Length: 235
Image (cartoon, rainbow, N blue to C red):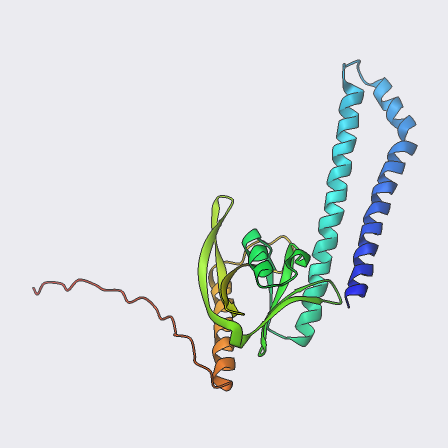
């Protein structure tokens, strides 16, 4: 599967390079038309330089858009492929430095984690996936290695967003994996409010069900915080 993913990644790189070359060739072939337009314009110092900088900036924006579009298409294809096997158990995650460093501590190849990755929480455990139409598993943790799952928050830019924190215990190490979840639809960012907490509750339910089926000790249930009201004086 890794060789197929490598060929797919190489094909995307070649596609982006060909598109960039086509843009550069179009600019070169249209050089005469650009010269005519420049000659027809009023004599303003620095105009050719400004046009050159604008062309370079446009090329950078175009290449960046192609790369982001390819990554988004791969993410959607990956989500569809995984959902066809693990219906209802697939979520979308956003890579962050804390998650990568802690996966490295657990011996996973976290450098292969894409900017948007897939999280599968099925009956066997929780796993992280990359790739496209042929997803590749990057890390996996059976439910018996998961100690607890809780909701927390982190700061992204100037906004506080929720993160799902999964504590893993493996080979004597206990490490928390902070996962920022994302809406899989294009143009969306962090998952918040009801959809986020519904995902965390689903993970907790699968965790408890798997431990109960294996006859292992269940983690404590985190209940709602009671609201204490002062007693009103009698009239």
